[in-house]
Length: 274
Image (cartoon, rainbow, N blue to C red; front, side, top):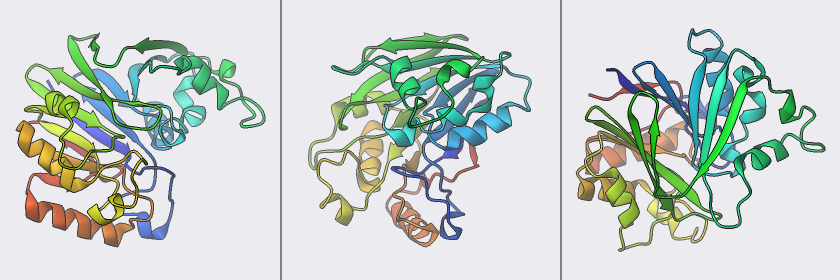
C-alpha cells in the first residue's frame, strides 16, 4: 500500500513569499500524508490553502487533520481552506489538550471572528468534527492506521506524531527545543526505526545559542536523534524565514556531509516511503 508525504508548507514562524525563497518554498507548516486511499494532514499553516485547492480536484472527500499546536504559523491556513466550505467534504480535526488550553473548535474559530477575520467558522459547510486527546495517547484511524503521540518542549505545548501502517512509519516532530547534551527521550522513543522523520531544524547551531526559550531545534540535533534511534531518513523542516534558497542549499549540503540520508524539505515535493 502506497505511503507518502507531500510538503505543502515547510517554513516556520511566518510565510515568506519572495524570489529568494522559491526553491524551498515560503508557506508555513502543512504536510499531507497518504496511506493507501486515506489522507492525513499534519498542520494547517499557509500551505493548507494550496492543499485545499488541489483537493477540490480530487475524488476523495474526507481526511484526518492532526495539529501539532495552535501557534499561528500552524493554523493560519484554516480560513482559506476551500474544502471546508463545501458540504461534500468531511474532516476530523484532532489535537492534544494541554493544561489551560481551550478546546480545538474555540481556538480555530477565534481567529475567524471580528476584528481578525470577516468570515466566521460557522459559514463552513463541510462536516467538521473536533477531538482532543492526551499527549502520549495512541490514536487508531480508519484503515488500521496507528498514530502514536508525544509531548514536545515548546512554549504553550506541542505534540509530535508517528504514523504506522503495515510496517512503514513516518514521524512528524515540530516544534521542539532540545536541551544540549540531553537527548529528548520522548522523541527518541517516538522515532525509533522510523522510515522518515520530519524534524524541526529551524536554527543553525550559532543561531540556537541566541534563541533559548524560543522552542526550536537544529539539523545537528535532528541527525543525532535519528542516528541514536536508528531512523532511516531525515527531512529538515520548519525553515527559518531568513534562510533563503542560498542559505538552505548550503545548510542541506552541510547536513548531508555529516549524514547522507538527510534532505531539506521542499514545498511541492512528495517523498514515498519504501
